[in-house]
Length: 116
Image (cartoon, rainbow, N blue to C red; front, side, top):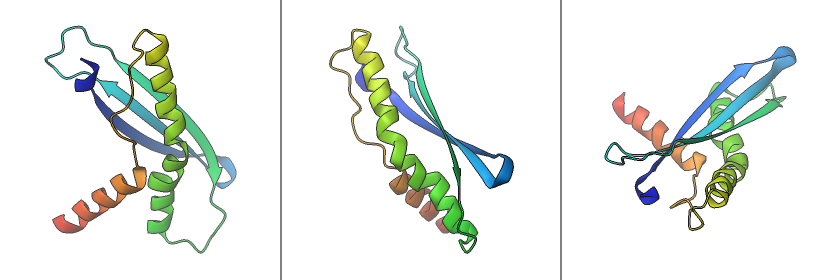
């Protein structure tokens, strides 16, 4: 039944001291309602960074935070979940497709543009 599970993404950030930001990237692996014996798995990765280019526009900073940085670390997170499942007895477990945050960001931006 693992093939029916969905991967959800949660990205949040919070400001720290001295212009630093903490980005929390969470992947949540959830079972659909019809699955009786559910497995719930989450993997979270926190990245602390600072954007030093003061010339960047707000939209560029948003893209860096929501797309570029998550794309740098998404493979580590999916590999972690895959390893956890495989070591727990689900030897054939793997994600159906790679998570591409830049594509998700562009889709979301396009949807917001269409609504306005």
